[in-house]
Length: 160
Image (cartoon, helix red, strand yellow):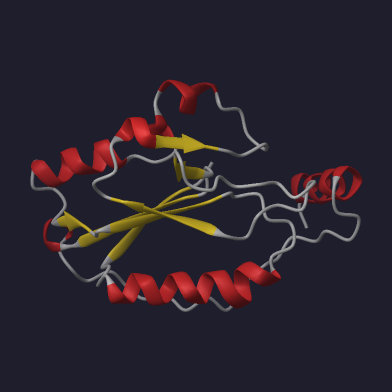
């Protein structure tokens, strides 16, 4: 284990979750991307805690994180998007939400023909999830089903 990883685990244990341990997944299935990008439907997934204003924002649950996700329509006006996440600096996201949820930038790539299109819905998590079991066992499989239903060809994962 690297020194940086050990320090991160120690920090989270000290601040929030005494038995925290990073999950190292070594058996993720890999599927090569064979479709031309200019023919592909893309779904954005952010870990920036993005939500639609007026809907339920994320909550930190006293340092335990939030394993849920928020569904965001491609047609949601940018000024209707907010973000909640206590574990990163919001300065840039406050100025331009595209830093953590690049919907306008991706739409520009669609308009220019670099990407085939966007799916109807995109998703955001609050990326701080020190207790991953609900994410692995419930939230992840639920989202995977939604990606299949939308016929997502590729995901643009936007970490914070």
